[in-house]
Length: 332
Length: 261
Image 1 (tube, each protein chain N blue to C red):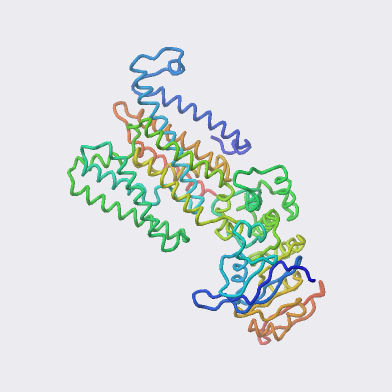
Image 2: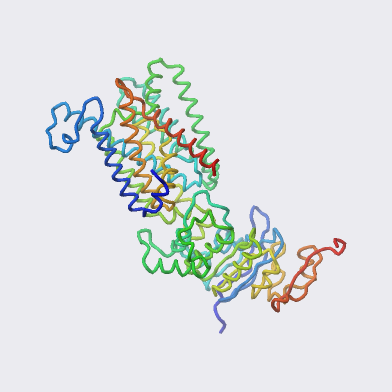
């Protein structure tokens, strides 16, 4: 997309354009795959056979919804955390969420191999444990110093990763394979139950963020400046952190480690949609959904016989994106 | 009966980590006064401004805002009455000038309120006051330091405060913007308490100056009354000469050592 052309369009028009792209991506996601479904069949003009109906409603539809929600949720959390911490490298996984989830999934895989269904629950608890540890350690500075909170996140992340690695080292190789596969991220186990669990968390976070849009804008300057405008800086930051932790933990529990979405999409949104909180929040939700639904479609279409882990594709695109940003800045 | 002061300090002391920062402060600021807060580094100027924002609590004594204890004001209530303009070094994430000025509405708006036509009109008026009406859609981070300070002044106007605090508003600005910022602040006709390093700027724009030294208020009066050679030499620990500023009937201060020349 041409940035100069987009810049002259008002934000609502840009969102409308993004909606059109979103619909196209959805159409592509529902029709492409090993079982071919035509657009006319999708729109009900031509009847679906039994196989197509099963694939569409039991596999592709829940998977698409989960991709849209996970993309929107991760990008929204990334945007919120970057603005609230004034750190362009902040993302939902910064507070040890993935390491915690990986530990939870490892424990479930090793201790309860016959209860595979419990893996997301253990992963969710592990992610929350990580955030809980970060908050407890950060409490010594009353969560006032952002840098110390971020350092706590890094420390907790390494500590939990060390425990996970030790557990995997002493366990049977099959368990290690399963955890590694889970960590690469996948939407293949998507179900409507997962969608109904994540949906309210994402919507609640978006609504609260939109209500506090002016306060979020104020946080972008300095804490002192925000306080002088009547913003309760520390409580607001803590609520944002907890909401983002809950959303990311739920997404990681069901989809595994999907990296770079929360880090990359907000940067893209700032250049395409604008700089104020409303444009950033809505743009992140739209672009995050488009991106992950598109990448998921790509990851299951690139290879003829098997699908690529979605986390691998997002990481590859993310690294290219940041390299292109680096070259853009160098050119000035 | 006299007018109720906007701010009153009654025997205010401030200790931080058992270190005495401010001692026995007693003064009142009347409506419409432009008061300069002067003193060397570590005199307590910024701490005094932070007391007024409730970032610090007095160890003893009382601060009153419009005759009510400052402690009785909640953070939003206080923000509706006291605005702050301080130095902001280039924000990481950019915002437009309009976004920054509209932040001034935060203390006056419920969360679900949207911006009305009157708000947008007030935005334009505030920007006109600081001479930046044409830069409403510009990026804040890409403005010069002087323009950024003027945008923050427009934000303070939008906040409609009783008292405007300026924390070293002219630091890092060139001569032109130093005068611009203070001229605009003076023209706003609201009560101002400004911590200023440059004594000649303070002398030119302040109706009254408070001179702090080692946490104590050592002089309070008009620039003519406070800016005396003896006092400034003692407080700033450098020889000082005072004559009349040819641009107005205010003291002009020169510091230096004779053997420098």
